Image (cartoon, rainbow, N blue to C red; front, side):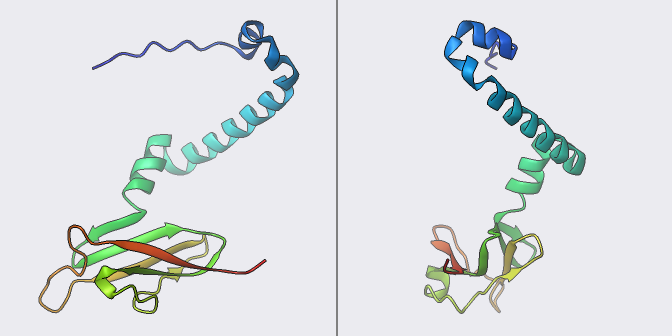
Length: 135
């Protein structure tokens, strides 16, 4: 394993090394406080930043294999509709519409076919087709 030596400098130490930062100290402090607040919220809700990213992100969003099919999830809070399209459904946006939850997460389940074969195979191409409100 490669060890990375980390040097944690206080903001004052960083400014002393780079005086151009001086005019941005108040902005840096405000953004750092907002980051700390968001990080605390994440850790309170999910246990750790790792759990938030990996357990509740990497293994939740995107295309995930379930018992008898595939589940696709995407967070798109500004979208009003979504569907999963790809070579598996001839790019038909009406074939696999997604459901939207209260948090803006769209999801769709693609069951295996009647022979128990996955509709999505290795090398399948797919995309999420989003519907947006014109502003």
